[in-house]
Length: 238
Image (cartoon, rainbow, N blue to C red; front, side):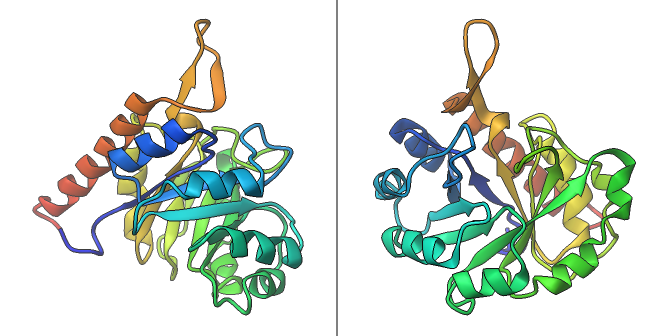
């Protein structure tokens, strides 16, 4: 498998040591910590520091922020070694650039894609051009508040070609991530995937436990991504 063909995997919204360990054991490339107090998966910077210390070499901590000031972002990154920043609010290209010390720290910018047919009206090509200093553009569903709410937008309505690295997010599960990879990967430079609610545990009544991950679901998700990668590699048309 060439480096270009392997889909990178980020598990986001982790709040517990055992979930960080499970994600690393399953083969995740990045672990996301939500530094947005209004999120049910939020952790403090101090908690993110504790959890990030469990990461082995070459597994990247990602700090998700929403409309935080440059001072707050810079301070958080100083505390979490090797962190990438994920801007998930209304941040302008200029504010992202400043908060990452003139883009000397890697960062992602979330694009909030409308649900339903509205996805066709989102100019992702222009968005990627506006945020050209970003390491990648993360595609999430546009719902009330910030975050995808576990919903998937219509992947088929994305532009046929985007000159950027993309991270597919929003409503991904072990059952649908393979289809998402197949539809989105041909449209971009490289593709990564990002999951949160799709690998969370449920209580006895079947209600999702936000911020609590299920190690079996994490393993299933990673296996589904790898299966999609292998399918592409062995495709006679590839």
